[in-house]
Image (cartoon, rainbow, N blue to C red; front, side, top):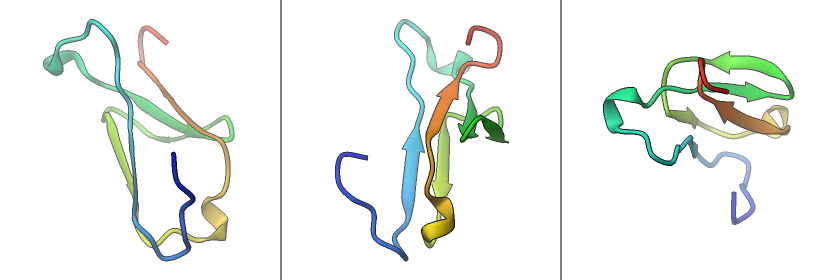
Length: 64
């Protein structure tokens, strides 16, 4: 995120694609190379804690 996240905050991550219409928006979210959520373009982490630290990214399930 652009600003630091404080423990206890709620964090929302979005995955956006260029040239893709809304019905085709799907994403897999990864944390430190492990799949943690599939088939949505938004991931919400409630009550952020130290255990949530890591490298997050998303990619389209078929197109990468």
